[in-house]
Amino acid sequence: MPKWLAASVEVLTVEEPTVGIDVKSKAYLRELADDAPLFC
Image (cartoon, rainbow, N blue to C red):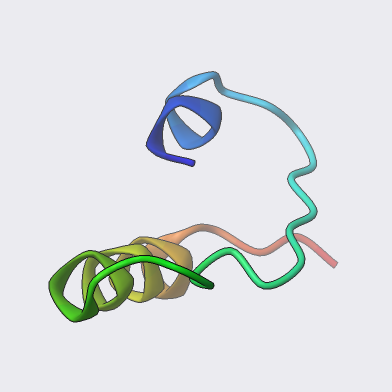
């Protein structure tokens, strides 16, 4: 997932991106998602 975030895509849709990863990585991904800009 970090590769996708670094790819400068306009739209990124994910479904259950944290299934099967450790707790620390899950927290990091959630932090990245929270910091990502949202355009509505």
